[in-house]
Image 1 (tube, helix red, strand yellow):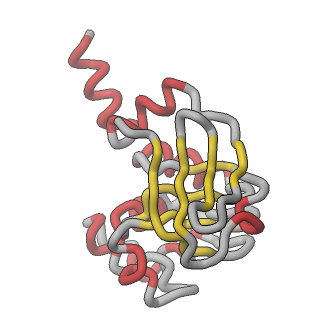
Image 2: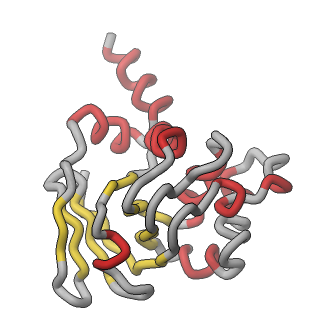
Length: 167
């Protein structure tokens, strides 16, 4: 798998909570494609259109705070988000994102490194975030091999299915 993910930057601020990521009224849906239609609706109704070609979502501190709904990372992933690069994450959102196979990167320089519309590259294995528009870059702690395996499988459930087949 190519661990260098590229996409146009969609940038948001601090404390983006799960109710903004996927408003509660849509939690009646279980289909990822239906959830994706409403991703980030609480802050940017045009997000699904902007993200559909594939994007890197950049955010400030405490991304994914609020409730523990796993539909939030599911909605982002299926809307076209290749990775979320944020200054920090709510712990439960981070774990849910990994569980559904959405790469999440902690990068304290995230919001100062990018502007909306910049082209980004995130190398999960090497631990490097690059702004391909300006040439700026920042390092982050590379993801451990097991986490890369989970992401490569598409999430924890698929990872476990593969492991059980090997046993």
